[in-house]
Length: 305
View (spheres, rainbow, N blue to C red):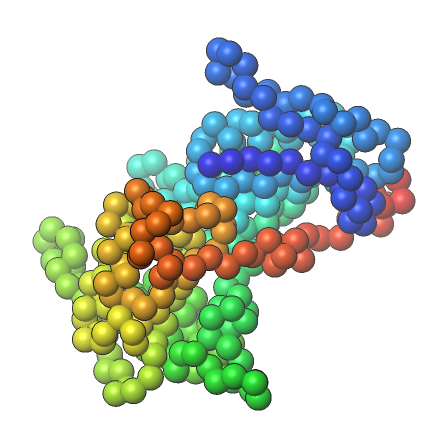
């Protein structure tokens, strides 16, 4: 996980960052003022967090306190919400709420995230703006149905399980192509995964599996096997590529694997070297411009202050 800081003046002029993170020898997180931007106008202090390292949340809290003391507006860009998969209120612990409470304690003016796992954690965070994936996928992967310059690269979207249906349907609707439903099956006693199934697919065409997060990739490999399709007819898009454990093996099931730079600047499977021939199948979409456009304009009284 990394945390970086930037500073804006007025409605959006970027100036030299006010703050820099620092760690004391004993391990405590701290914030240093490296550029005193007082007197330049109304300031918006921004932080960007990638990954899920709890130390950076402490650094973020220090930044928020320092920014508030200097009467600055505060915006957190956190594309990947840590704890978003821990979203069951009856779980022990209720992880999504624990993380949300930490973020809310900083009293930020805006929090921007990308394609959260479910509506639960965003509903717990104050002043949150949610960026979804459908237009990102259409522009960067599938293409436009009404384009005269190039045919669409995929002819259907696959939702890998019930939890992904809304997300996959939104992408399919944006791309004007059909959505197909797959399902995980669990042993009713042990609740362990026992297999996968997918509704019948057309005999021709390519299909893109759409979901929010990929860790080890086992679910996607099982689904790909259930479709009976070769890798060249399947693609995978996940908003957040964590890529742990066996994720490199996804290339045996999907012709291309897409993610964004939400979790890491250069997401790649654990242990994959730069010269690994499988690396070409893993592709990253830079969503920084999308995240920037989600920044809310300052309130008029703040801009005029």
